[in-house]
Image (cartoon, rainbow, N blue to C red; front, top):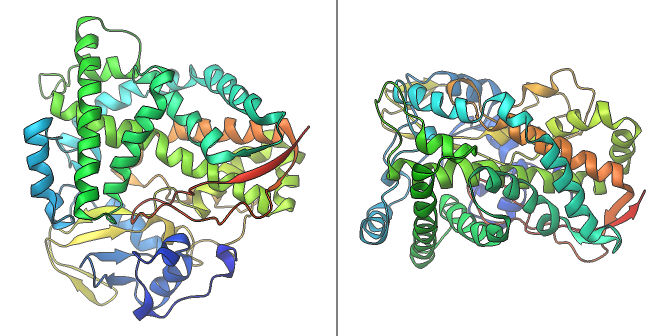
Length: 420
């Protein structure tokens, strides 16, 4: 059953830790938008916001809804995890996404320099060559696990190159980012959370050696910029603790995981909906960029992240107390029929196609969005250029997703492909 066919749920049945809802949350989102647009999750005690206008307002209003927060308000195991960092690695500092102005603005200036448009545009030939090289490995075979053989390696190799990690280490890094993402997803046992943290500490020791090399011998990578560029207002470069936080959250996870998820869901849509496949192939130059935007809207790679309330806030007649954790549900907002007509449909001609919130909005709009868009456009363009038809391998897919409160990631996607 496709997402569009999933019926709304009873409010009392909504549990985002239920594997069935994790696989398809859209019925739950519809119920929340219509019946409880300000809903306190009885399990986490977070307030879940789901309507488009509310989410957009909240992301814009950084005074009442700041980003900085104590992790312990979301994860009660934070003290146990902090002790592991202290004993074996580095305690990650607040990430860029977890800071408020003026610190956020000052730190973002460093990232804006490292991710400047001219720097991103220079990557195009490398991404095009990489996409073709990955497809070459399965084109003759005529079938693949699209997730493992294309959607994962494409953005991971790209960001790895920019972060000074050789391609042969890419699957080792993927194991570290998977562990980090699983802890972000809030669906682990205590033992699993300890394992995830120890995996991250293993990554810290790997990247610490890279930081130290780049301080001695700067090069032209993005990571070299991040390691060696002074933030003027701070009068210093980033500390090891700040760099380690950014390596996982804002570069390797932010720079690969979300693009992987969108590439996977986009290919699923193309295999599931032949009319969309034919439309995109009819004029790739025009339709591929539009298709990428619809994928981001329909299957938000980041389903939702967090803010807090600095003051008591009243919304739709509900008072959210100061100090509460807000779960900002981008993916629910992106299917709000108050904003998007027939929101469960792929419509490459919709007038407001680019107004989705998949990359956030306002001050904290995703700084990696330009790179992610280039990777999606180049990846989908390679798919429609290289193949005449695409379909699911019969009986090979259950379309299950990784268990995760925050992200939406297909585990695998087995495709049969007819070369053009």
